[in-house]
Image 1 (cartoon, rainbow, N blue to C red):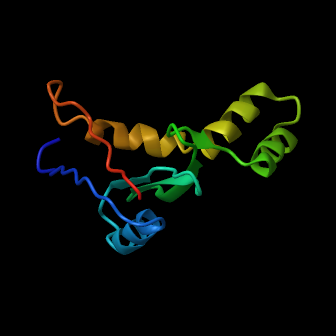
Image 2 (cartoon, rainbow, N blue to C red):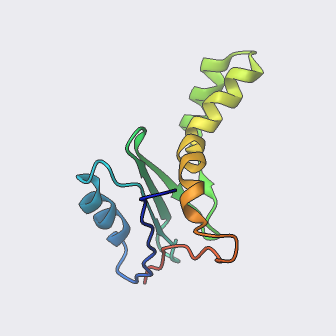
Length: 123
């Protein structure tokens, strides 16, 4: 994308640093960003994604980086969808931040030759 800059930063920090980073970046409304904090033996991980159009999204992650959808959120999606499978799909895509993933994906790949390196590390 012409006129757009992209950067990656590898970090290490105490549990909760990911939330602090995402909070510090939140005031930059025209910035697209993604912050990932790995799970540790005593705590869940997290992923924060932000785009100017969608705002901020947070999801808890497990030890291998999968997003975890809380039971109450799954139950809500089922209740809202009823027997409508398309509505259930819509609710679950919302629960995993699919729109944020879709918008940020173009920025994850600077070129076809670059390997993606996720910004994460806790502990």
